[in-house]
Image (cartoon, rainbow, N blue to C red; front, top):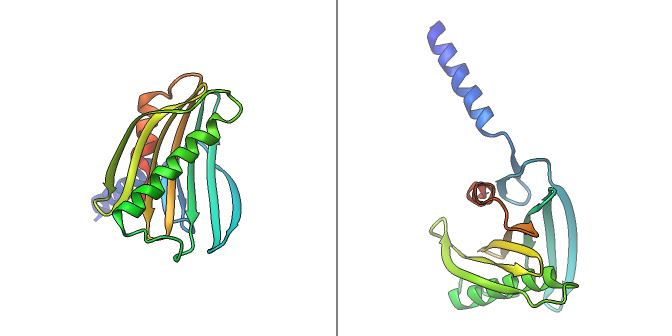
Length: 175
């Protein structure tokens, strides 16, 4: 019995240690690895068909920015289950990310790689890699119903460490 309790305690401890750095937002429906507690910025954008609610969770280091943005669209805005409509929406969001980051640099953003995939074999998603001025940008954007998640890693003046970026992207989970 004593050995069983010890093994159970060690198992629980290993689970807790494995979760270090994992941020979970139950309200926004995701978890992701951040090196420290993220800053939250919220916005609400009124459109002709309703309001878009945006929650942006960000951590900025010396040479990197990590962000997850959750955008809740009005359900009547677009058929998010239609692949063509979803792909167009995602491509527009990715272009918007790069254009916003390139503002003030005097340079056109350049997307060097873009790939459509199904996140969790279920949700429309797209990865991209590119540059916006001196910013080296990696993204993946996915749609879950009427919610768009934008997962972004930005290297400032140089690409982010590949291992750090891979850890960030691979840790993103829908809950």
